[in-house]
Length: 181
Image (tube, rainbow, N blue to C red; front, top):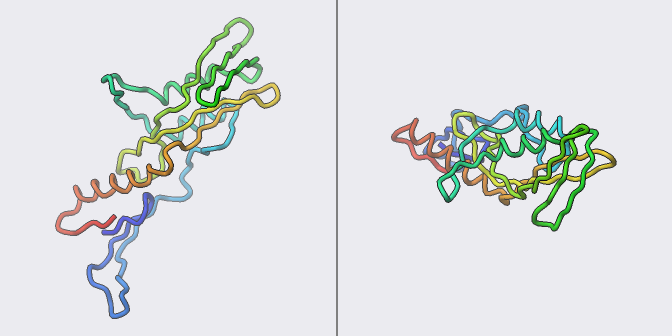
């Protein structure tokens, strides 16, 4: 078995032919037509909420103090408190943002945006738990509306973790055959 990437694996012959080629018996790829979250794109709150609910696996992430982080719930909560007719005040020092949101006519909340959130987007095979990665959560004002975005914040390390998770899953399913990743 050869794990080619976080989205592709192939069952390959152990022996190569006289030209050094190995026969591929089967190949599995993560479908390209599966909807994924649009990282790095600014979305209005409604589209952001829909994309986040559809694009992330709910996982429990244990903090160092033993509590469980609910970063997806946090992101959805912030996004749901923002309305198209909101007035927004924000302060950004490059590391943390402070956003004051006026909801409707009466309700006003003041919340510091958590700059980094840990989420598990659907990016690899459904047989394994999706890889938890760090994302940068940002908000900005465009005209009289606010938009939200998530930016990948792990430098692509999720790919290595996903390949290791695929290898672990295959190792539990296939015995007696080497798995190359």
